[in-house]
Image (cartoon, rainbow, N blue to C red; front, side):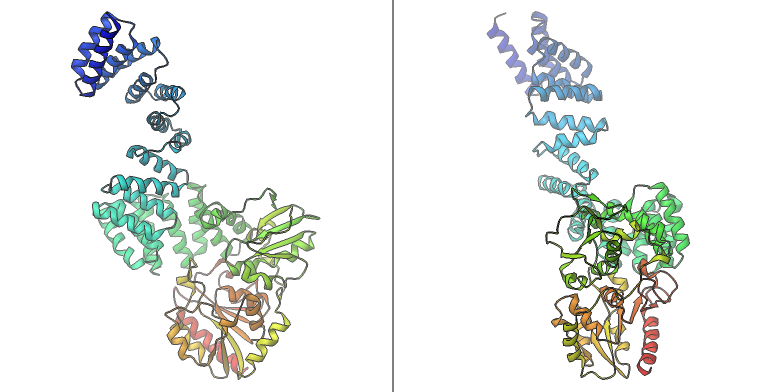
Amino acid sequence: MSAPATLARLQSAVRLLQAGQADEAARLLTALVDEEPQNADALALLGLAHAQRDDDEAALRLMTRALEINPRHPSTQFNQAKVLRKLERWDEAEQAFARVLELKPDHAEARRARAHVLVEQKRDAEALAELDRVATDNIASLTLRAKLRMNFARPADAVADYDRIVALDPMSWEAWNNRGIALDQLERYDDALKSYDRALGLQPNDDNVLHNRGAVLICLKRFDEAMPLFERLVTTDPERADNWACRGAALASLNRIEEALTSFEKGLELDPVSLRALNGKGMALTALGRVAEAIAVYKTAVEHHPSNPMTHGNLAFAELVAGDLTNGFESYEWRRKDGPIGKGQRQYPQAEWLGEDLAGKTLLLHPEQGLGDVVHFGRFAPILERRGARVILETPAALKALMQTLPGNAVVVASGETPPSFDRHAPLMSVAHRLGTTLETIPAEVPYLFAVDAKRARWRAKLAPLQGKRVGVCWSGHSIHRNDHARSIPLATFAPLLDVPGLSYVSLQREVRDTDAPLLRTKTNVADWMSEVADFADTAALIAELDLVVTVDTSVAHVAGALGRPVWILITSSPDWRWLLHRADSPWYPTARLFRQPTIADWPAVITDVRRALTAFASA
Protein backbone atom coordinates (compact mmCIF):
# COMPACT_ATOMS: atom_id res chain seq x y z
CA MET A 1 0.00 0.00 0.00
CA SER A 2 1.26 3.47 -0.81
CA ALA A 3 2.35 5.80 1.98
CA PRO A 4 -0.39 8.36 1.25
CA ALA A 5 -3.06 5.64 1.48
CA THR A 6 -1.64 4.37 4.77
CA LEU A 7 -1.53 7.91 6.13
CA ALA A 8 -5.15 8.49 5.13
CA ARG A 9 -6.25 5.33 6.97
CA LEU A 10 -4.29 6.34 10.07
CA GLN A 11 -5.88 9.80 10.02
CA SER A 12 -9.34 8.22 9.71
CA ALA A 13 -8.57 6.02 12.71
CA VAL A 14 -7.50 9.03 14.75
CA ARG A 15 -10.77 10.81 13.93
CA LEU A 16 -12.77 7.74 14.96
CA LEU A 17 -10.87 7.48 18.25
CA GLN A 18 -11.40 11.17 18.94
CA ALA A 19 -15.12 10.65 18.32
CA GLY A 20 -15.18 7.73 20.75
CA GLN A 21 -15.86 5.18 18.01
CA ALA A 22 -13.30 2.68 19.22
CA ASP A 23 -14.89 -0.39 17.62
CA GLU A 24 -14.81 1.10 14.13
CA ALA A 25 -11.28 2.38 14.66
CA ALA A 26 -10.17 -1.08 15.80
CA ARG A 27 -11.59 -2.75 12.68
CA LEU A 28 -9.83 -0.28 10.40
CA LEU A 29 -6.53 -0.55 12.28
CA THR A 30 -6.63 -4.36 12.57
CA ALA A 31 -6.86 -4.59 8.82
CA LEU A 32 -3.97 -2.15 8.46
CA VAL A 33 -1.79 -4.08 10.92
CA ASP A 34 -2.52 -7.31 9.08
CA GLU A 35 -1.22 -5.66 5.92
CA GLU A 36 1.67 -3.80 7.60
CA PRO A 37 2.63 -5.70 10.80
CA GLN A 38 5.70 -3.46 11.36
CA ASN A 39 3.73 -0.19 11.24
CA ALA A 40 4.41 1.23 14.68
CA ASP A 41 1.80 3.99 14.34
CA ALA A 42 -0.94 1.51 13.43
CA LEU A 43 0.02 -0.78 16.34
CA ALA A 44 0.05 2.15 18.76
CA LEU A 45 -3.35 3.42 17.60
CA LEU A 46 -4.82 -0.07 17.72
CA GLY A 47 -3.54 -0.36 21.29
CA LEU A 48 -5.26 2.94 22.06
CA ALA A 49 -8.51 1.61 20.54
CA HIS A 50 -8.33 -1.46 22.80
CA ALA A 51 -7.64 0.82 25.78
CA GLN A 52 -10.79 2.81 24.98
CA ARG A 53 -12.67 -0.52 24.98
CA ASP A 54 -11.15 -1.38 28.41
CA ASP A 55 -9.27 -4.31 26.92
CA ASP A 56 -6.13 -3.22 28.73
CA GLU A 57 -4.04 -6.38 28.37
CA ALA A 58 -4.47 -6.35 24.57
CA ALA A 59 -3.76 -2.63 24.54
CA LEU A 60 -0.54 -3.16 26.46
CA ARG A 61 0.67 -5.93 24.10
CA LEU A 62 0.06 -3.78 21.01
CA MET A 63 1.70 -0.67 22.49
CA THR A 64 4.70 -2.73 23.59
CA ARG A 65 5.08 -4.08 20.03
CA ALA A 66 4.88 -0.52 18.70
CA LEU A 67 7.63 0.62 21.07
CA GLU A 68 9.85 -2.30 20.11
CA ILE A 69 9.71 -0.93 16.57
CA ASN A 70 9.93 2.77 17.53
CA PRO A 71 11.08 3.15 21.16
CA ARG A 72 11.43 6.93 20.99
CA HIS A 73 7.80 7.81 20.44
CA PRO A 74 6.58 9.96 23.41
CA SER A 75 2.82 9.61 22.84
CA THR A 76 3.03 5.81 22.62
CA GLN A 77 5.23 5.71 25.71
CA PHE A 78 2.70 7.92 27.50
CA ASN A 79 -0.30 5.79 26.49
CA GLN A 80 1.52 2.61 27.51
CA ALA A 81 2.33 4.19 30.89
CA LYS A 82 -1.33 5.12 31.39
CA VAL A 83 -2.40 1.53 30.68
CA LEU A 84 0.21 0.21 33.13
CA ARG A 85 -1.09 2.66 35.72
CA LYS A 86 -4.65 1.51 35.12
CA LEU A 87 -3.51 -2.10 35.57
CA GLU A 88 -1.84 -1.02 38.87
CA ARG A 89 1.53 -2.26 37.67
CA TRP A 90 3.11 0.61 39.56
CA ASP A 91 6.81 -0.05 39.07
CA GLU A 92 6.46 -0.48 35.31
CA ALA A 93 4.13 2.51 35.06
CA GLU A 94 6.58 4.74 36.93
CA GLN A 95 9.44 3.68 34.67
CA ALA A 96 7.28 4.24 31.59
CA PHE A 97 6.35 7.77 32.67
CA ALA A 98 10.03 8.42 33.43
CA ARG A 99 10.91 7.36 29.85
CA VAL A 100 8.33 9.81 28.51
CA LEU A 101 9.99 12.59 30.50
CA GLU A 102 13.41 11.60 29.18
CA LEU A 103 12.07 12.06 25.67
CA LYS A 104 9.98 15.14 26.47
CA PRO A 105 10.89 16.86 29.78
CA ASP A 106 8.13 19.46 29.36
CA HIS A 107 5.38 16.78 29.24
CA ALA A 108 3.39 18.17 32.19
CA GLU A 109 0.70 15.49 32.06
CA ALA A 110 3.32 12.73 32.26
CA ARG A 111 4.95 14.47 35.20
CA ARG A 112 1.62 14.72 37.03
CA ALA A 113 0.80 11.10 36.25
CA ARG A 114 4.22 9.92 37.42
CA ALA A 115 3.64 11.76 40.71
CA HIS A 116 0.39 9.86 41.26
CA VAL A 117 2.18 6.57 40.61
CA LEU A 118 5.04 7.53 42.96
CA VAL A 119 2.47 8.04 45.72
CA GLU A 120 1.20 4.50 45.11
CA GLN A 121 4.81 3.38 45.57
CA LYS A 122 4.97 5.34 48.83
CA ARG A 123 7.64 7.64 47.36
CA ASP A 124 5.90 10.79 48.49
CA ALA A 125 8.92 13.09 48.52
CA GLU A 126 9.68 12.29 44.88
CA ALA A 127 6.02 12.72 43.99
CA LEU A 128 5.93 16.16 45.55
CA ALA A 129 9.13 17.14 43.76
CA GLU A 130 7.49 16.23 40.45
CA LEU A 131 4.31 18.15 41.21
CA ASP A 132 6.26 21.19 42.39
CA ARG A 133 7.69 21.41 38.86
CA VAL A 134 4.26 21.57 37.22
CA ALA A 135 1.95 24.52 36.72
CA THR A 136 -1.46 22.92 36.61
CA ASP A 137 -5.17 23.49 36.80
CA ASN A 138 -5.83 19.77 37.05
CA ILE A 139 -7.93 19.43 40.21
CA ALA A 140 -6.79 15.88 40.96
CA SER A 141 -3.14 16.92 40.77
CA LEU A 142 -3.72 20.10 42.75
CA THR A 143 -5.50 18.06 45.41
CA LEU A 144 -2.68 15.52 45.59
CA ARG A 145 -0.04 18.23 45.70
CA ALA A 146 -1.87 20.07 48.48
CA LYS A 147 -2.11 16.86 50.48
CA LEU A 148 1.59 16.14 50.03
CA ARG A 149 2.51 19.71 50.92
CA MET A 150 0.57 19.34 54.14
CA ASN A 151 2.32 16.03 54.86
CA PHE A 152 5.68 17.73 54.38
CA ALA A 153 4.80 20.65 56.67
CA ARG A 154 4.22 23.18 53.89
CA PRO A 155 0.76 24.49 54.79
CA ALA A 156 1.26 27.88 53.13
CA ASP A 157 1.92 26.16 49.79
CA ALA A 158 -1.07 23.88 50.39
CA VAL A 159 -3.30 26.92 50.92
CA ALA A 160 -2.20 28.24 47.51
CA ASP A 161 -3.27 24.94 45.93
CA TYR A 162 -6.61 24.91 47.73
CA ASP A 163 -7.19 28.52 46.73
CA ARG A 164 -6.82 27.44 43.10
CA ILE A 165 -9.05 24.39 43.58
CA VAL A 166 -11.93 26.39 45.06
CA ALA A 167 -11.53 28.98 42.31
CA LEU A 168 -11.96 26.18 39.76
CA ASP A 169 -14.67 24.36 41.72
CA PRO A 170 -16.26 26.59 44.38
CA MET A 171 -18.77 23.84 45.18
CA SER A 172 -16.11 21.46 46.48
CA TRP A 173 -16.86 21.31 50.18
CA GLU A 174 -13.93 18.91 50.68
CA ALA A 175 -11.53 21.51 49.29
CA TRP A 176 -12.96 24.23 51.54
CA ASN A 177 -12.59 21.92 54.52
CA ASN A 178 -9.00 20.97 53.67
CA ARG A 179 -8.17 24.61 53.03
CA GLY A 180 -9.39 25.33 56.56
CA ILE A 181 -7.10 22.63 57.96
CA ALA A 182 -4.10 24.18 56.19
CA LEU A 183 -5.01 27.67 57.43
CA ASP A 184 -5.43 26.23 60.92
CA GLN A 185 -1.85 24.93 60.81
CA LEU A 186 -0.70 28.42 59.86
CA GLU A 187 -2.60 29.72 62.92
CA ARG A 188 -4.75 31.83 60.62
CA TYR A 189 -7.73 30.85 62.69
CA ASP A 190 -10.18 33.48 61.49
CA ASP A 191 -9.53 32.54 57.87
CA ALA A 192 -9.79 28.85 58.74
CA LEU A 193 -13.16 29.44 60.36
CA LYS A 194 -14.45 31.17 57.22
CA SER A 195 -13.27 28.24 55.12
CA TYR A 196 -15.02 25.73 57.37
CA ASP A 197 -18.17 27.85 57.18
CA ARG A 198 -18.04 27.68 53.37
CA ALA A 199 -17.69 23.90 53.62
CA LEU A 200 -20.66 23.67 55.97
CA GLY A 201 -22.71 25.83 53.65
CA LEU A 202 -22.27 23.10 51.05
CA GLN A 203 -22.35 20.09 53.39
CA PRO A 204 -24.14 21.21 56.58
CA ASN A 205 -24.05 17.92 58.46
CA ASP A 206 -20.57 16.61 57.82
CA ASP A 207 -19.12 15.59 61.16
CA ASN A 208 -15.52 16.14 60.10
CA VAL A 209 -16.15 19.75 59.13
CA LEU A 210 -18.16 20.36 62.30
CA HIS A 211 -15.32 18.87 64.30
CA ASN A 212 -12.72 21.07 62.58
CA ARG A 213 -14.87 24.16 63.07
CA GLY A 214 -15.21 23.43 66.77
CA ALA A 215 -11.46 22.90 67.13
CA VAL A 216 -10.65 26.25 65.52
CA LEU A 217 -13.21 27.99 67.73
CA ILE A 218 -11.23 26.66 70.70
CA CYS A 219 -8.06 28.15 69.19
CA LEU A 220 -9.93 31.45 68.86
CA LYS A 221 -10.93 31.14 72.54
CA ARG A 222 -14.59 31.19 71.53
CA PHE A 223 -15.29 28.35 73.91
CA ASP A 224 -18.99 29.03 74.36
CA GLU A 225 -19.50 28.61 70.61
CA ALA A 226 -17.34 25.48 70.40
CA MET A 227 -19.14 23.71 73.23
CA PRO A 228 -22.52 23.12 71.45
CA LEU A 229 -20.72 21.72 68.40
CA PHE A 230 -18.97 19.05 70.42
CA GLU A 231 -22.06 18.29 72.45
CA ARG A 232 -23.76 17.63 69.11
CA LEU A 233 -20.87 15.54 67.80
CA VAL A 234 -20.66 13.25 70.82
CA THR A 235 -24.36 12.59 70.24
CA THR A 236 -24.26 12.05 66.47
CA ASP A 237 -20.86 10.31 66.41
CA PRO A 238 -20.27 8.98 69.94
CA GLU A 239 -17.74 6.37 68.83
CA ARG A 240 -15.19 8.94 67.65
CA ALA A 241 -12.61 9.43 70.39
CA ASP A 242 -11.52 12.79 69.04
CA ASN A 243 -15.01 14.24 69.51
CA TRP A 244 -14.84 13.45 73.21
CA ALA A 245 -11.31 14.83 73.40
CA CYS A 246 -12.31 18.12 71.76
CA ARG A 247 -15.37 18.35 73.96
CA GLY A 248 -13.00 17.96 76.89
CA ALA A 249 -10.80 20.77 75.57
CA ALA A 250 -13.80 23.08 75.30
CA LEU A 251 -14.93 22.19 78.82
CA ALA A 252 -11.42 22.72 80.19
CA SER A 253 -11.25 26.14 78.56
CA LEU A 254 -14.49 27.00 80.32
CA ASN A 255 -12.85 25.90 83.61
CA ARG A 256 -15.19 22.90 83.87
CA ILE A 257 -12.18 20.71 84.58
CA GLU A 258 -13.84 17.73 86.28
CA GLU A 259 -16.28 17.41 83.36
CA ALA A 260 -13.39 17.80 80.94
CA LEU A 261 -11.50 14.99 82.64
CA THR A 262 -14.52 12.70 82.29
CA SER A 263 -14.75 13.57 78.59
CA PHE A 264 -11.06 12.86 77.99
CA GLU A 265 -11.38 9.53 79.79
CA LYS A 266 -14.36 8.62 77.59
CA GLY A 267 -12.21 9.34 74.55
CA LEU A 268 -9.49 7.08 75.92
CA GLU A 269 -11.98 4.27 76.43
CA LEU A 270 -12.63 4.41 72.69
CA ASP A 271 -8.99 4.91 71.72
CA PRO A 272 -6.48 4.27 74.53
CA VAL A 273 -3.65 5.91 72.58
CA SER A 274 -5.54 8.99 71.34
CA LEU A 275 -2.95 11.77 71.36
CA ARG A 276 -5.49 14.55 71.90
CA ALA A 277 -7.24 12.68 74.71
CA LEU A 278 -3.98 11.76 76.47
CA ASN A 279 -2.68 15.31 76.32
CA GLY A 280 -6.04 16.66 77.40
CA LYS A 281 -6.28 14.28 80.34
CA GLY A 282 -2.78 15.23 81.44
CA MET A 283 -3.61 18.93 81.30
CA ALA A 284 -6.85 18.39 83.23
CA LEU A 285 -5.05 16.44 85.93
CA THR A 286 -2.41 19.18 86.14
CA ALA A 287 -5.11 21.83 86.48
CA LEU A 288 -6.61 19.80 89.32
CA GLY A 289 -3.24 19.66 91.07
CA ARG A 290 -2.84 15.93 90.39
CA VAL A 291 0.55 16.43 88.79
CA ALA A 292 2.02 12.99 89.56
CA GLU A 293 -0.93 11.40 87.73
CA ALA A 294 -0.49 13.86 84.88
CA ILE A 295 3.18 12.89 84.51
CA ALA A 296 2.18 9.23 84.25
CA VAL A 297 -0.37 10.06 81.53
CA TYR A 298 2.15 12.13 79.57
CA LYS A 299 4.71 9.34 79.77
CA THR A 300 2.11 7.02 78.26
CA ALA A 301 1.54 9.58 75.52
CA VAL A 302 5.29 9.83 74.87
CA GLU A 303 5.54 6.04 74.72
CA HIS A 304 2.90 5.85 71.99
CA HIS A 305 3.73 9.14 70.25
CA PRO A 306 7.49 9.47 70.77
CA SER A 307 8.01 12.10 68.06
CA ASN A 308 5.20 14.48 69.09
CA PRO A 309 6.71 17.73 70.44
CA MET A 310 3.53 18.86 72.21
CA THR A 311 3.46 15.71 74.32
CA HIS A 312 7.07 16.16 75.39
CA GLY A 313 6.34 19.82 76.12
CA ASN A 314 3.39 18.92 78.33
CA LEU A 315 5.52 16.36 80.15
CA ALA A 316 8.19 19.03 80.62
CA PHE A 317 5.70 21.43 82.17
CA ALA A 318 4.47 18.79 84.61
CA GLU A 319 7.97 17.69 85.58
CA LEU A 320 9.17 21.26 86.04
CA VAL A 321 6.19 22.39 88.09
CA ALA A 322 6.75 19.31 90.27
CA GLY A 323 10.32 20.49 90.87
CA ASP A 324 12.07 17.86 88.74
CA LEU A 325 14.24 20.34 86.84
CA THR A 326 16.66 17.72 85.53
CA ASN A 327 14.10 15.71 83.58
CA GLY A 328 11.87 18.71 83.03
CA PHE A 329 14.48 20.83 81.29
CA GLU A 330 15.50 17.84 79.18
CA SER A 331 11.90 17.33 78.03
CA TYR A 332 11.58 21.10 77.54
CA GLU A 333 14.11 20.95 74.71
CA TRP A 334 11.26 19.55 72.58
CA ARG A 335 9.73 23.03 72.48
CA ARG A 336 12.27 23.73 69.75
CA LYS A 337 10.86 21.13 67.36
CA ASP A 338 7.39 22.54 66.76
CA GLY A 339 5.09 25.55 66.97
CA PRO A 340 6.17 29.19 67.00
CA ILE A 341 9.36 28.46 68.94
CA GLY A 342 10.35 25.72 66.52
CA LYS A 343 9.64 27.90 63.50
CA GLY A 344 11.75 30.68 64.99
CA GLN A 345 14.83 28.56 65.63
CA ARG A 346 18.07 30.35 64.83
CA GLN A 347 20.35 28.92 62.19
CA TYR A 348 24.01 29.91 62.39
CA PRO A 349 27.14 28.48 60.80
CA GLN A 350 28.66 28.35 64.29
CA ALA A 351 27.89 25.27 66.37
CA GLU A 352 25.29 25.35 69.13
CA TRP A 353 26.65 25.18 72.67
CA LEU A 354 25.56 21.93 74.28
CA GLY A 355 27.24 22.28 77.67
CA GLU A 356 30.91 21.81 76.82
CA ASP A 357 33.74 23.92 78.27
CA LEU A 358 33.52 27.52 77.08
CA ALA A 359 36.84 28.83 78.37
CA GLY A 360 38.12 31.39 75.89
CA LYS A 361 35.02 31.06 73.70
CA THR A 362 32.44 33.71 72.84
CA LEU A 363 28.84 32.57 73.32
CA LEU A 364 25.78 34.26 71.82
CA LEU A 365 22.62 33.79 73.90
CA HIS A 366 19.46 34.59 71.97
CA PRO A 367 15.86 34.95 73.20
CA GLU A 368 12.90 32.97 71.96
CA GLN A 369 9.91 33.76 74.17
CA GLY A 370 8.55 36.54 76.37
CA LEU A 371 10.14 39.52 78.09
CA GLY A 372 9.81 37.91 81.50
CA ASP A 373 11.71 34.85 80.30
CA VAL A 374 14.65 37.01 79.22
CA VAL A 375 14.74 38.67 82.65
CA HIS A 376 14.38 35.30 84.37
CA PHE A 377 17.13 33.49 82.47
CA GLY A 378 19.41 36.49 82.03
CA ARG A 379 20.83 35.59 85.46
CA PHE A 380 22.88 32.84 83.78
CA ALA A 381 25.02 35.24 81.72
CA PRO A 382 27.33 36.17 84.66
CA ILE A 383 27.60 32.48 85.60
CA LEU A 384 28.79 31.61 82.11
CA GLU A 385 31.30 34.43 82.29
CA ARG A 386 32.64 33.05 85.55
CA ARG A 387 33.18 29.78 83.70
CA GLY A 388 35.45 31.52 81.24
CA ALA A 389 33.07 32.46 78.44
CA ARG A 390 32.71 35.82 76.78
CA VAL A 391 28.95 36.36 76.57
CA ILE A 392 26.85 38.22 74.05
CA LEU A 393 23.25 38.52 75.23
CA GLU A 394 20.60 39.40 72.68
CA THR A 395 17.41 40.88 74.12
CA PRO A 396 14.26 42.60 72.87
CA ALA A 397 14.96 46.31 72.44
CA ALA A 398 12.70 47.25 75.38
CA LEU A 399 14.99 45.26 77.72
CA LYS A 400 18.40 46.25 76.37
CA ALA A 401 19.19 49.07 78.81
CA LEU A 402 18.01 47.07 81.82
CA MET A 403 19.91 43.91 80.87
CA GLN A 404 23.08 45.98 80.49
CA THR A 405 23.05 46.30 84.30
CA LEU A 406 23.82 42.58 84.72
CA PRO A 407 27.02 41.98 86.69
CA GLY A 408 30.02 41.15 84.55
CA ASN A 409 30.98 42.15 81.07
CA ALA A 410 28.30 40.63 78.84
CA VAL A 411 27.78 42.52 75.60
CA VAL A 412 24.04 43.23 75.30
CA VAL A 413 22.57 43.75 71.84
CA ALA A 414 18.99 44.37 70.84
CA SER A 415 17.21 41.94 68.51
CA GLY A 416 17.82 43.10 64.97
CA GLU A 417 21.27 44.48 65.73
CA THR A 418 24.29 42.65 64.34
CA PRO A 419 26.11 40.96 67.22
CA PRO A 420 29.90 40.81 67.49
CA SER A 421 31.54 37.63 66.21
CA PHE A 422 31.01 34.51 68.31
CA ASP A 423 32.09 30.89 68.50
CA ARG A 424 28.97 29.19 69.87
CA HIS A 425 25.33 30.08 70.32
CA ALA A 426 22.41 28.84 72.40
CA PRO A 427 18.77 29.72 73.09
CA LEU A 428 18.65 31.54 76.42
CA MET A 429 16.01 29.17 77.83
CA SER A 430 18.23 26.14 77.24
CA VAL A 431 21.05 27.44 79.43
CA ALA A 432 19.65 26.11 82.73
CA HIS A 433 19.49 22.63 81.20
CA ARG A 434 22.99 22.84 79.73
CA LEU A 435 24.33 23.89 83.14
CA GLY A 436 22.57 21.01 84.91
CA THR A 437 20.47 23.30 87.12
CA THR A 438 18.45 21.59 89.84
CA LEU A 439 16.04 22.93 92.43
CA GLU A 440 18.90 23.02 94.91
CA THR A 441 21.37 24.81 92.60
CA ILE A 442 19.13 27.59 91.21
CA PRO A 443 21.24 30.77 91.14
CA ALA A 444 19.03 32.99 93.29
CA GLU A 445 21.37 35.80 94.31
CA VAL A 446 19.41 39.03 94.02
CA PRO A 447 19.56 41.68 92.92
CA TYR A 448 21.15 40.71 89.61
CA LEU A 449 19.60 43.64 87.77
CA PHE A 450 19.83 47.25 88.92
CA ALA A 451 18.06 50.55 88.46
CA VAL A 452 20.04 53.50 87.16
CA ASP A 453 20.51 56.20 89.83
CA ALA A 454 19.54 59.10 87.57
CA LYS A 455 16.30 57.40 86.58
CA ARG A 456 15.56 56.55 90.20
CA ALA A 457 16.00 60.18 91.20
CA ARG A 458 13.45 61.26 88.60
CA TRP A 459 10.85 58.82 89.91
CA ARG A 460 11.68 59.63 93.51
CA ALA A 461 10.71 63.24 92.86
CA LYS A 462 7.44 62.22 91.25
CA LEU A 463 6.56 59.85 94.08
CA ALA A 464 7.41 62.29 96.86
CA PRO A 465 3.87 63.71 97.28
CA LEU A 466 2.34 60.24 97.80
CA GLN A 467 1.38 59.43 101.37
CA GLY A 468 2.06 56.17 103.17
CA LYS A 469 3.70 53.12 101.71
CA ARG A 470 3.83 53.03 97.94
CA VAL A 471 2.54 49.93 96.17
CA GLY A 472 2.98 49.27 92.46
CA VAL A 473 0.15 47.28 90.90
CA CYS A 474 -0.25 45.29 87.68
CA TRP A 475 -3.38 43.20 87.10
CA SER A 476 -2.99 41.90 83.55
CA GLY A 477 -0.30 40.76 81.16
CA HIS A 478 -0.03 40.92 77.40
CA SER A 479 -3.35 40.01 75.82
CA ILE A 480 -1.82 37.76 73.16
CA HIS A 481 -0.22 35.43 75.72
CA ARG A 482 -1.59 31.92 75.22
CA ASN A 483 -2.66 31.68 78.87
CA ASP A 484 -3.80 35.27 79.26
CA HIS A 485 -7.42 34.34 79.94
CA ALA A 486 -6.25 32.46 83.06
CA ARG A 487 -3.39 34.60 84.41
CA SER A 488 -4.82 38.13 83.98
CA ILE A 489 -7.41 39.57 86.36
CA PRO A 490 -10.20 41.95 85.34
CA LEU A 491 -9.72 45.27 87.08
CA ALA A 492 -13.20 44.99 88.60
CA THR A 493 -12.03 41.83 90.40
CA PHE A 494 -8.65 43.34 91.34
CA ALA A 495 -10.14 46.66 92.54
CA PRO A 496 -10.63 45.74 96.27
CA LEU A 497 -6.84 45.87 96.58
CA LEU A 498 -6.77 49.54 95.58
CA ASP A 499 -8.38 51.16 98.61
CA VAL A 500 -6.47 49.81 101.63
CA PRO A 501 -5.92 52.70 104.11
CA GLY A 502 -2.36 53.85 104.56
CA LEU A 503 -1.23 52.91 101.05
CA SER A 504 -0.63 54.90 97.89
CA TYR A 505 -0.88 53.09 94.56
CA VAL A 506 1.17 53.39 91.38
CA SER A 507 0.11 51.67 88.16
CA LEU A 508 2.71 49.47 86.47
CA GLN A 509 0.14 48.44 83.87
CA ARG A 510 1.52 49.06 80.40
CA GLU A 511 -1.53 47.82 78.45
CA VAL A 512 -4.87 48.96 79.88
CA ARG A 513 -7.71 47.08 78.26
CA ASP A 514 -10.84 48.72 76.97
CA THR A 515 -12.87 46.76 79.53
CA ASP A 516 -10.72 48.12 82.38
CA ALA A 517 -10.20 51.72 81.28
CA PRO A 518 -13.53 53.22 82.53
CA LEU A 519 -13.05 51.81 86.03
CA LEU A 520 -9.38 52.85 86.16
CA ARG A 521 -10.38 56.44 85.40
CA THR A 522 -12.44 56.46 88.61
CA LYS A 523 -9.47 55.31 90.70
CA THR A 524 -8.03 58.73 91.42
CA ASN A 525 -5.83 57.26 94.14
CA VAL A 526 -3.86 55.24 91.53
CA ALA A 527 -1.03 57.29 90.05
CA ASP A 528 -0.38 56.39 86.43
CA TRP A 529 2.83 57.55 84.75
CA MET A 530 3.21 54.61 82.38
CA SER A 531 2.92 56.90 79.36
CA GLU A 532 6.28 58.33 80.46
CA VAL A 533 7.96 54.92 80.70
CA ALA A 534 10.21 54.45 77.68
CA ASP A 535 11.54 50.97 78.41
CA PHE A 536 12.12 48.47 81.20
CA ALA A 537 15.02 50.47 82.58
CA ASP A 538 12.42 53.13 83.39
CA THR A 539 10.09 50.49 84.84
CA ALA A 540 12.93 49.14 86.99
CA ALA A 541 13.77 52.60 88.31
CA LEU A 542 10.14 53.19 89.24
CA ILE A 543 9.88 49.78 90.95
CA ALA A 544 13.09 50.49 92.87
CA GLU A 545 11.42 53.51 94.49
CA LEU A 546 8.33 51.55 95.60
CA ASP A 547 7.86 49.68 98.85
CA LEU A 548 6.03 46.75 97.31
CA VAL A 549 4.85 45.41 93.95
CA VAL A 550 1.60 43.45 93.66
CA THR A 551 1.24 41.83 90.26
CA VAL A 552 -0.08 38.94 88.26
CA ASP A 553 2.39 36.58 86.59
CA THR A 554 3.88 38.87 83.95
CA SER A 555 7.19 40.59 83.16
CA VAL A 556 6.69 43.08 86.01
CA ALA A 557 6.96 40.20 88.48
CA HIS A 558 10.30 39.12 87.00
CA VAL A 559 11.73 42.63 86.96
CA ALA A 560 10.77 43.23 90.59
CA GLY A 561 12.19 39.85 91.60
CA ALA A 562 15.44 40.40 89.68
CA LEU A 563 15.83 43.80 91.37
CA GLY A 564 15.44 42.10 94.75
CA ARG A 565 12.38 44.21 95.56
CA PRO A 566 9.44 42.89 97.62
CA VAL A 567 6.94 41.47 95.15
CA TRP A 568 3.66 39.64 95.68
CA ILE A 569 2.66 37.51 92.72
CA LEU A 570 -0.93 36.41 92.18
CA ILE A 571 -1.00 33.08 90.37
CA THR A 572 -3.51 30.55 89.13
CA SER A 573 -4.21 27.19 90.72
CA SER A 574 -2.30 25.66 87.78
CA PRO A 575 0.58 28.12 87.50
CA ASP A 576 3.49 28.54 85.15
CA TRP A 577 6.10 25.87 85.90
CA ARG A 578 8.60 28.20 87.58
CA TRP A 579 6.26 28.89 90.51
CA LEU A 580 6.16 25.18 91.42
CA LEU A 581 3.44 23.71 93.64
CA HIS A 582 2.09 24.30 97.14
CA ARG A 583 4.55 26.96 98.24
CA ALA A 584 4.31 30.66 99.00
CA ASP A 585 7.94 31.44 98.18
CA SER A 586 10.05 31.13 95.04
CA PRO A 587 13.51 29.57 94.80
CA TRP A 588 14.08 31.81 91.77
CA TYR A 589 13.20 35.10 93.49
CA PRO A 590 13.84 35.19 97.27
CA THR A 591 11.91 38.46 97.74
CA ALA A 592 8.74 37.09 96.13
CA ARG A 593 5.62 35.96 97.96
CA LEU A 594 3.12 33.85 96.05
CA PHE A 595 -0.66 34.02 96.45
CA ARG A 596 -2.32 31.03 94.81
CA GLN A 597 -5.87 30.36 93.74
CA PRO A 598 -7.23 27.69 96.10
CA THR A 599 -9.41 26.32 93.30
CA ILE A 600 -9.63 26.87 89.56
CA ALA A 601 -10.41 30.47 88.53
CA ASP A 602 -10.98 31.55 92.15
CA TRP A 603 -9.49 35.04 91.97
CA PRO A 604 -11.88 36.43 94.61
CA ALA A 605 -10.27 34.18 97.24
CA VAL A 606 -6.82 35.40 96.21
CA ILE A 607 -7.94 39.03 96.36
CA THR A 608 -9.30 38.47 99.88
CA ASP A 609 -5.96 37.00 101.02
CA VAL A 610 -3.91 39.77 99.40
CA ARG A 611 -6.13 42.51 100.85
CA ARG A 612 -5.69 41.05 104.31
CA ALA A 613 -1.91 40.96 103.79
CA LEU A 614 -1.90 44.54 102.44
CA THR A 615 -3.78 45.74 105.49
CA ALA A 616 -1.11 44.20 107.71
CA PHE A 617 1.63 45.61 105.49
CA ALA A 618 0.18 49.13 105.70
CA SER A 619 0.20 49.11 109.48
CA ALA A 620 3.57 47.39 109.96
